[in-house]
Length: 140
Ligand code: CMP
Image (tube, rainbow, N blue to C red; front, top):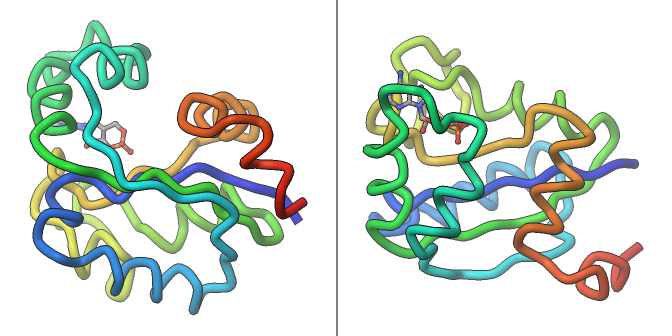
């Protein structure tokens, strides 16, 4: 078993899709270890997406991620990082496979419903960004 970090983004949370997305993830074998509903500040979004600072879409991404509430969650299952990326599909919903979370629920390449960590190291870093160590060991 290992863990990854996901965020149900403001487009999906604000349009009432969080429940269906969580059910989809649980149906794919993920267990929710930690979860919260929050409204990111600009500095939190800038820091979380700091790796994209030089990209042309950075400002717009930060605006979108601070446009409403979102739902960060730590998920657990075997091969969690790779499996979650497979289950959510490509960044652009138009390119995402049939039946993936983004194909089902995302609006566009930016407003793409859900985030998933891209490596075990980033999963650990991103989980600590949102959750205290005590929240993460509670279900270990
Ligand atoms: P995410 O998996 O959270 O990681 C970075 C985010 O930037 C991505 O999902 C999208 O929301 C956004 N993104 C990536 N590429 C583009 C793009 N070309 N145009 C707009 N937004 C993008």
